Length: 173
Image (tube, rainbow, N blue to C red):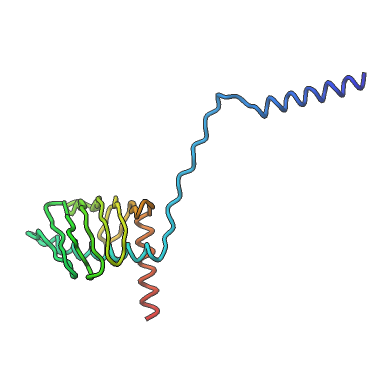
């Protein structure tokens, strides 16, 4: 009798284990984790810093009533028609050339900035901008995303990295 009880217990335990392991097909699928943001490299910091400095210069020129064009330091221009900015071979430094179109809600708070630009010359990249800019006592701050060559970055994190790089460069002399 003892042998029979041991075999029956083992058989029941194995059967229960199989049933638990197999589960049922009605369970809800697990959602995939969101993709992590791309890594912020020194090249990305330099690229974003140059772009922000360029846009700041155009932004401050564009708030002057009647401004329809802002020339680049190294050539080209930004043509302004309402909230639409068209960058035509715009060069902030003579080495980088920016082409594309962005929409800047200069009359809104915070300022939405969306569009696509292509960089060539000293740096090559395609950027998709979906940001909001706020003007405060510390200057411009950004939220939203910047997609550089298909890699998505948080605009606030990029801005913080640029500020840290500028502070480190100033401290180094």
